[in-house]
Image (cartoon, rainbow, N blue to C red; front, side, top):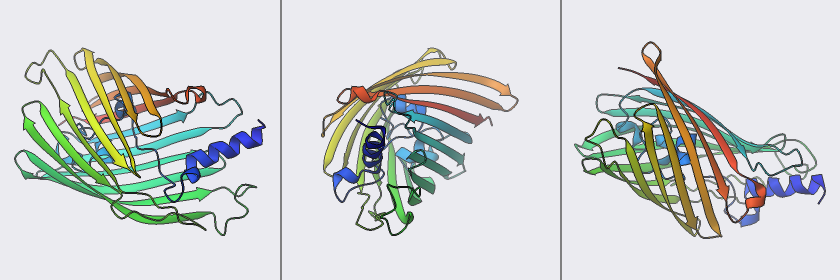
Length: 306
């Protein structure tokens, strides 16, 4: 297959143009920590990336934090194509809840990009129940080249919104529910390209929540959107309490979805006075399309200590 054809196929897959009217923004992940857990994060949602998975997340974040990620997709592609992800996120807790913001871009470098800018607020509506809402701007853009010359314009944007709930079932156990893209925005340029509403639900369990010397997380998620259903499981264990951890996850679902994931985390407390910094790495490998190679993510999350 020629290099030009490979680039075209990659572009079509990334843009989702091979899936009919439901086209863009098919990736549902953000951040290396969640990536290492198999993107099972709906009931976890307790860091700067949590609002992406559940708008209620900022209500349970204890300290202000900012995170950034760079991702490299499909490491098996050898024709020079560069599929990437970059993001920036921020959460600031308040007396009654918390505020959050994030920006995320994914794309095929020099050909196509998908951008999301989002802001939201979450609050405790009951002692054990938090609710949140996010307003976001979805945008797609094409570079001026032979693949886009037939388009009437090169970019388009649309408004969307998410809602989420987090419930503390028992000490060390949370349940989460979120609905993304409630407005089903159309980001098609010359033909409709609807971002479908998606539903996530999950449970997170910290078995040793009362023991400071142990830190284990086990999480389960279900995801439904555009007629497809998937389930996933993930775990995180801090081998050195509050210093270093390992993560693993697995997801299975419709359209031959079968993805294994894993990752590492390292936390440096007080690297800068009043701050702790966490470094995370994750990989994800589709067992159905293993020849495309893994996705790699690298994140830095800065937490401002109270």
